[in-house]
Length: 407
Image (cartoon, rainbow, N blue to C red):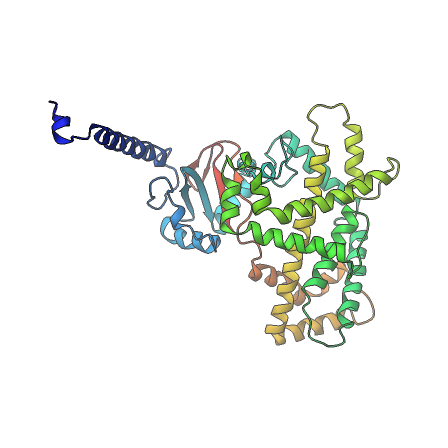
């Protein structure tokens, strides 16, 4: 009789137990290999747990503050691992400046982000914001910037649109006749109308229920996608294999895209290649030129994703900043009084402000910049990925390394 039979009369149970030990040892060995640093000059990291690595040390309710706390111990350039996937977290002005400005091309790529795949978009159709760095991204970005400029971005014509919309906003405030009200909806509509005039070629009334529904969907989508579970789901490489996840976690974004697609369809019915009314028309003109070109970036999916990115990015950030500005004016009435005196002295009460007035209003200009600094509406910027091997503050970051910026 073998020693194994003497020790364990239930041979099957012993075999399972033995296989379990072997499997556990192999898993721990694999885990050890996966969690090793790729090189000696890779950024330092906190001690990690098997498989989940540093996941338990990350505060998903406030990632920015969590990164700052870890950086106090591990430095402004540190690394973290989640499910064996490494990322480098950068803190501090000088470090971020080196990565994004001095080594801009080294860090210009985007990491795999499966949100669009989960939503059903395939191939390289990822708009501009989440697209990978390369010639196709450069072409689409160049077109987007030049078209926005053609329709007034940074020019006098856009300044006039902003001034006109500000007048509508003031009228809406005055219509409340001194009653307490939440300015959020009115501010959001005003800011959105400026973007709409460029992208859609029209503005919407403040009581347009269909348009208000779109704005609500944007807010709901941002809140839903900011929660820990959707963030983890969209970062997992296999998540796009389960189409039901889109309906489960990203329903507001799906409905927003459906709304924008309806606007695109309406444009197609009235489109005239000889008369470009807005950004959508300009994009469709490029699509017409690119007919027959294999794998062209100018297609229906990229049109939808690009206008969605422009609309969301151009609306939410400005709206939030203005709301912070109102709050700070209420909290600091002495600052509010000085700003009002500045406005009365330079602009007066009869004409609209212009960008040229800023040169004569240093105090108000400083207050605006301080609001933008202190409000910190985007504490974590969009993640980047290294396009090639690089060094940041002496630490090696290999090609395809994920970068997070605590701004």
